[in-house]
Image (tube, rainbow over all chains, first blue to last red; front, side, top):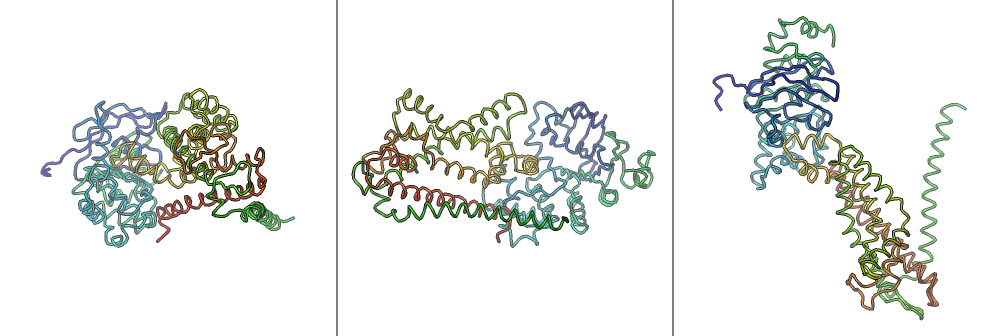
Length: 256
Length: 286
C-alpha cells in the first residue's frame, strides 16, 4: 500500500440508524482516511458509539436495529447482502470501553484470533503473540507470565492486552470505543501513546468523551449532537476555530 | 431497639441458621454412616446378592449404578447441553422459544415415578427392551434432560456479553465463540449442574424399579445393556420391602451408607478439578 496520496479507508454515506422506532443517527456523511486517527466527540447519547459500531456491524447483535444508507470500507459497501461479516470484522477490529480479556491465559488471549483464523503451528503463534504484545507495549510487563490468567492484570494492562489481541489478527482499521474511560491517568497516557505508534500502520477511529484526548491524539475530529454530525474537520482547526456555533459551545464547555 | 442491636441480632440469627444446616447434615451423616459403615467390607462390595441366605453382597448393584448413570449421561448431556445452547444463544425471543422453555419446565416438574411409568410403557413394553439397563438409562435421561437444559442455559446466560462481543469483533463465527469462549467459561457451572444430575440419578429408585428391574445379571460385571440391572438405590428399597434374606436390615444399612459415600465421592471427584479450573481462569492461583 502506497501512502503517497491521502487514501480513503472508510466512507459513510447517507446513513440513518433506528433502534425500533427511535432514530439514533440522521443522514451521516463522513470520510475517513487510511493511516490517520479520527476522533468522534459529543455528549452522551449523541450517537458516536452507535456510529462506531456500524463500521464493523457490531450493531447486528441488537435485533431491533435498522439501518439505511451505506458504509464503504475500501470502496465495498459492508451492508451489501453478500458481505462476509466475519471477514469484515477481521479487517475492522474493535477495542471496547471496558477491557474484556477472556478468562484464559495471556498467551491464549492473544493467540485466540490467529487460532480461529487457522494458524496452528506453535512457532507461528509464539511469533504473533510476541509481536502483538510488543506492538501494544505490553511485552516487557508480561513476558514472564504468559501462561498466567489475563484476569490478574491491572485494568490498563488488560486494555493494552485487548489491543494486542486485536493486532494479532492483523486488521486494517482499529475502532476504539472510549478505550480509556475505565482507566487511570497513567494507563490512559500509555494507551494514547500507543495510538500514536500505531497510526502509521492502521486507520484508527476513536470515540471519546474526553475532548483533551481527542485534541491530543487525533488528526481529524467529528462532533456529534443528537444523532447528527455537526462538523468534521482537522482537529486543530475544529478545536481552535470551529465552523459551527454548536461545536464552539460544546468545546468551550457551555453544555455536555 | 436501636439499629446496631437489630443488626447484631440479625447477624446472630443468620449464623444460627447456617450452623443449623451444618448440624442437620452432620446428624444425618452420623446416623446413616454409623449404622451402615460396619457392614461395608470388601466381601460386601464385591459379592453377589443372596435371595434366601444371609451374607449377600451388592457387587453387581454397585456396578449397575455407575453403568446406568454413565449411559444416562451419555444420552442426556448432548441433548440437554445442546438445547441449553440453543435457548441461550440461538433462539429468538418469540412464542416458539417460550413454548420450548415452558415444555422444559413442565418436564422438570413431572414426578419421577410418572417418568418410570412412561419408560415402562414405551421402552420396556412397546419397544421390547424389557427390564433392562438400556431401558433404565433412557428413562433416567428423560428425568435429567430438563435440569441439564436449564443449567446450560443459565450458565451460558451468566457469561458476560462482553466476551461474546470481544470474540465476534475478532472475526470469530458464532459457533467458534460458543465453543472456544462461552462453553469453557461456563464449564464450572455446567460441571456443577452435571454433578447435581448425576447425584440425583445415582439415588433415583422409582424410575428404575419400573424400567431396569429388581434383579441382576448372573455375570458381573455384565456390560450387556439388555440385561436387567438393579442399582444400589433400588436394592435398598427391594431388600427392605420385599427381601427374604434374614440380614435385610444390615444389607439395607450398608447399602444406604455406601450410596451416601458414593455420591459424596462423586461430588468431590467432579467438583475439585472444576474448582481448580475456575481459579486458574480467574487468575487467582499462581
